[in-house]
Length: 177
Image 1 (cartoon, helix red, strand yellow):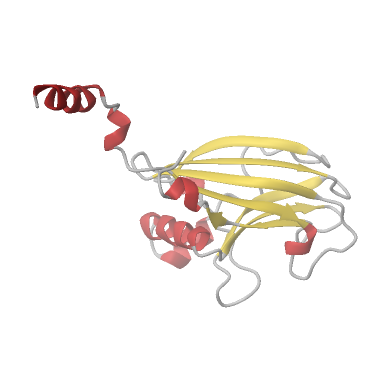
Image 2: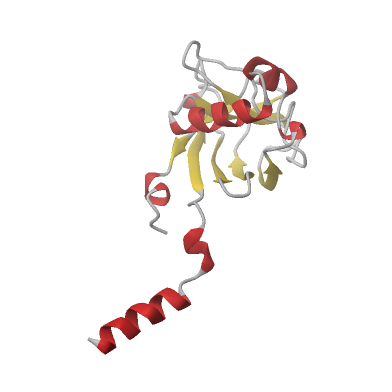
């Protein structure tokens, strides 16, 4: 009996403090011409977008890799929410994420945003939602419900060449890493 209690006490005493944190929410999507509305059949563009949101810090990390675009990239952002129409308001910074590679046909991106700041959003999206906190909740709900999408626009396809319909990663959402 004593040994069992010691093992349990030791496990509790040495448990990492991260166990008390809320699990990060991980969203992802494959960038493809076929996801555009209408599809951009002339593109060989492809890629992947990953968004990691920390409920504790309200920080959102956005990562993307892409290649095969027809012409140089001119815009990149996340649109939300497509429940009423196939296109939606730009939710994040516009015309592109700060530091996103523009004028290129392939590249990578990795940046973290403080989602409590107005500068992390398109002002029109915040206005439409009514506040920054409501805008954040709408964006997270859109990515959870697959009504938000990551979009890369090019000079040849200014309406968007490749799109990733964002999905909640249920493996990470359930705490399995």
